[in-house]
Length: 253
Figure: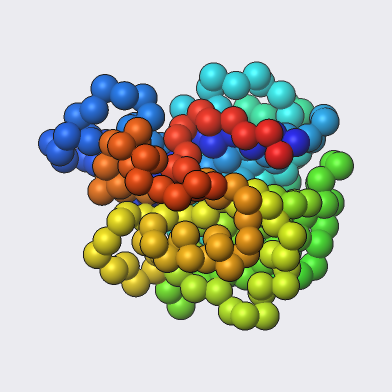
């Protein structure tokens, strides 16, 4: 099983629009972060995790093959705004989208033209599946367990597949969710910046503390702002077993 980080930036991406800081002017490709998304592949199964406004650009360099499912963490724009860009993949069949009830409702509200009785030619064919925490389901040969985390006061989803878990936009998590993360050895986790408290995202220190509670052997941080600093310098500041991911990074799970 392989995970490809398609984007590791926060909602504004890096470089941030209008910013002239050293990080935003960096020529290092690892300092350029599109909005957070990932591709999980196993055998003949390909699953997209989130589908933000940069998804066309993120998928363009990859082989044009079927996407067997899209896992959506929550309805915020930076995680769903690229759904319409998946329409070319409809040559392989409907796009199956898996989300909680609130996100399913939000997609129907923001993309009503995809869910009318008579679809006009060319509209993406989205098949919505409502999923819930702790109720596992399969996509191809992948068994997926949704878990619930809190994005400020908004309940959103993380996903566990085998000994791997992907969590983004988390600030807190209920103790009842922790058993569903037992045995995770590779963890993807949001880490917005080093300091300055944020109401709905973990800072680096909070993310390190949480990963240690889980007991993951390897933790990759995503959903980061330019305040993380230069990628190479920032990574040298992390403890063993932790690293800031970058766009295009592939991890064998």
